[in-house]
Image (cartoon, rainbow, N blue to C red):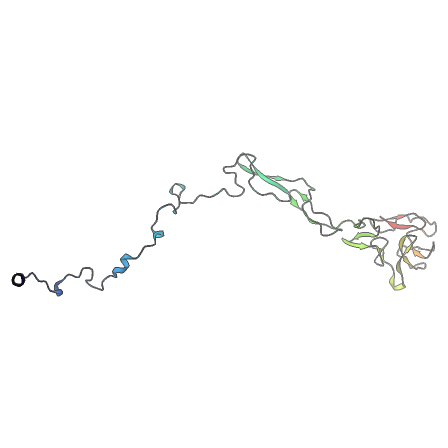
Length: 240
């Protein structure tokens, strides 16, 4: 057997069957370094080439499905809601394919007042108005006749700046204060020529009165501040 192998080797050598390593072809390496074979085996990011379910629908023009925008009546029947309401509008509804607003009646409350001396905001032509100051003299606390709104503020009309009603000011330079006389508040004490009303009455005690000091009746024209009037009683006084 050994002899046969030597003979076969010698025969092949004489015919040029043995190829040297220098003559072996180096496919893919000509003109530069060989490519990294490992890179051919690396997994590719399928998202870059995937044309399956994640891609936009071709039939929709390349755009993904979307729900109708607010205010749109697409796919909605007449009477269907197509948007939100607000304090001065009921929710809009579809009418013949058009999203139609529904304005609430003028005067509909639409907000919270700033305080007890400001109005409740209300709607006008679909717009919520402001909370505005109530009229001077508005009673802001039930059961308290002296709790009056003055200039949009919650006031007790028992002070030298609002004595009895809004805007009656006592002459503090003369030592006047706001005092109750027969259950009503007046600037006291006084002497002729010292009163805002022009009359210092001595009924019960000296006090600045809206009376006619000659007749004892309410003055004509009325001298009480705007919104109030002279009320006849044991003592005449300004009232709302």
